[in-house]
Length: 115
Image: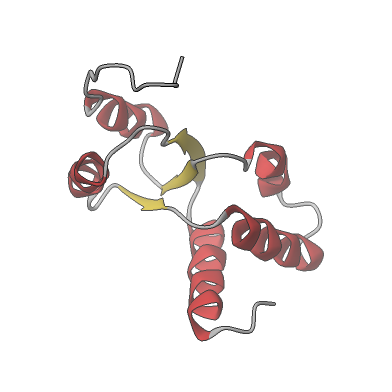
């Protein structure tokens, strides 16, 4: 388990979301601005929770969770926790939540070095 107070709170929040949410999916947040993330979170209030975090912290918390719950299906997501990703936890219809997330997509010009 993490020792820092903030990391312990993050671990407790992640454990709670895993235990109390029926659906979870991963979103890629490369080249997504903070204003856009704020809009997505605002539009998802009451339907879903968007959780971001450091990949190493997420992997550590999930490894500790899986040590206690070895057959939990969240283990399938471990290989996909790399680069800039976030989790969306929901009990609502996953298709409707995905539609809300993708409807906030904003076209932007390519950044130098991105291609």
